[in-house]
Amino acid sequence: MVWRFWLTLVGLALVFINLFLAAAVYVDAKRRGFGQLNLPPGLWALVTFFFPLWGFFIYWLMHHSTLVVRDRPPF
Image 1 (cartoon, rainbow, N blue to C red):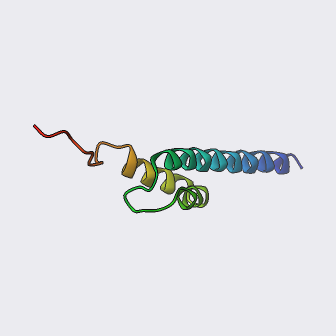
Image 2: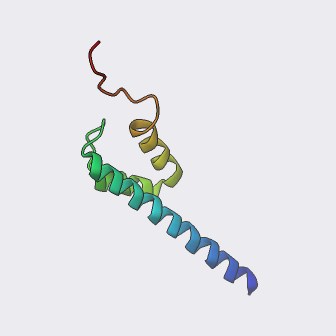
Image 3: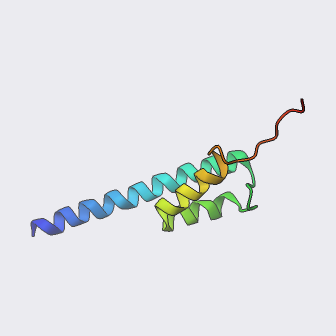
């Protein structure tokens, strides 16, 4: 009986973490507009919700890492 409580608690925590990551990605993607893959913010949020670690990592890699090619001013 006690294991059901802890399993439910862990399950709810995982759902809330997924929702938080998806909401954070959605807000950031909406602020930036369409990204490198021309995916809308809602699709980024869905990918992050259903694949939390991979979706968040790929979004971060494409938008916030040092691998992103940003427009640089000419010399």
